[in-house]
Length: 130
Image (cartoon, rainbow, N blue to C red; front, side, top):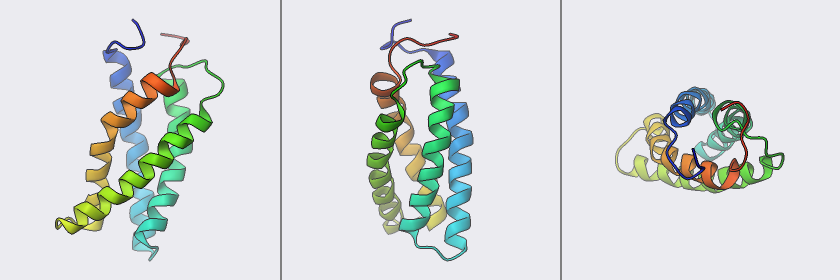
């Protein structure tokens, strides 16, 4: 299967591993907000944890990439997604959502964007163990 075609097994892995990573990130965010941290800082800490765990999951479990230089690209992607996520969280709060559900809604919006960029720009190339 070429890099630009839909690989249903890969998409299933992305959703499964991403759901686990997202759940962990949301739990970190919720715990930090509950502990009194600002939304900005709680989201930043949760995103950094999610970046490190997500890079491992996506490189090895989802895309099965052999590319060595993916962490910096992955970090850049998530730096941009952090800004979008934070904006979405505040936007959803402005629309009446609570600050916990706003993070969930933000994640739902970002999943397809993240998958496409990772597949086409970060973990493209030769994969192992397909």
